[in-house]
Length: 283
Length: 113
Picture 1 (cartoon, rainbow over the protein chains, first blue to last red):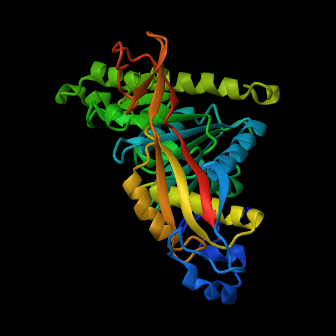
Picture 2: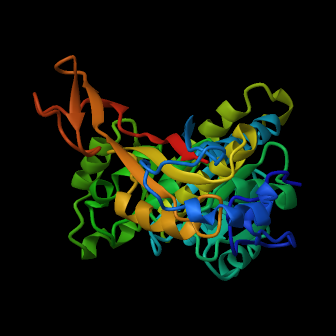
Picture 3: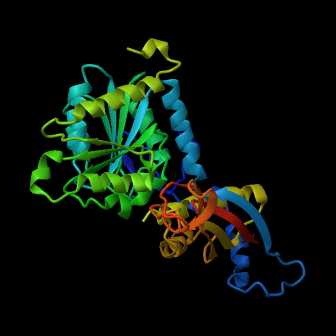
């Protein structure tokens, strides 16, 4: 169990997890409410306010702490877990409607004979996506973030407790459809994979530079529709490289299967790196 | 709108720090926010008031210290200022920039009782 619950998840729901995160933050402090009320006349006064002798004095505290440090601790714990169990964790990020779940179900269908696969699905509401994934026969767990716009390291840590991915497996984490917020939150994944479909604007890498900067791979999806669109593939790739010179790009179509082999090849190679130090798991 | 989550991260840090440093109220919070951090200061101010409501930082003032985006230009071998990730080097126009600063999202200091 998590010992530090209190990351303000509000109405986050993890399937099969009855642990509720709703709580009052002030509980952590065990306030003496009587004393607190006794000081209310002090609040809101400017720094020049002269305190009577014996009254509490304001003081400065140097804290120098990263705002995301808590999330980063959870992410580091997840990363350690992945490393110990030889799991390749991929964080799939995109706008809603980029074809992420279709891409994922096709990937699972094609790779299932060769690899153990598990999926964590993040959406604000419904378990529809996890059900779609479970229909392929692999383990999947839905996280509903409620009002939240992204998954965080803490939610994923809890999901791992329930999901228990197999040693040496592939773990796909399908983040909430959003090209902004998930960029900042490390989940402990080996790589962020950004999925962009050609039905979206080719300038999305420039409009959402943080996400394309954070991703190591961009999958340009739905290329079977290119003949009907005025999407400039070369320009899109140039934009992505402008934001992130290291980014790799694979063009594919989850519907026709074109380009999917290159994606599988990338997964296989990336997994080999994760399995260094786990000779028994390498196949 | 992940600023709300960031504010919750700030609150969590304050609650932990309040125990270790022995204070009960936070009056002012100074945050360092870099130009390339993806944080919208206006949303941060809004989220801060909402998240801090009825906590040890209820009514606290938020001060944001803006830090510029900095990058090392590999073409002209010098540090330059940038305001977005996709910008070219203002000196030579190259995109071969390595971001060296401006990604900060840090709680710098607090005024506490």
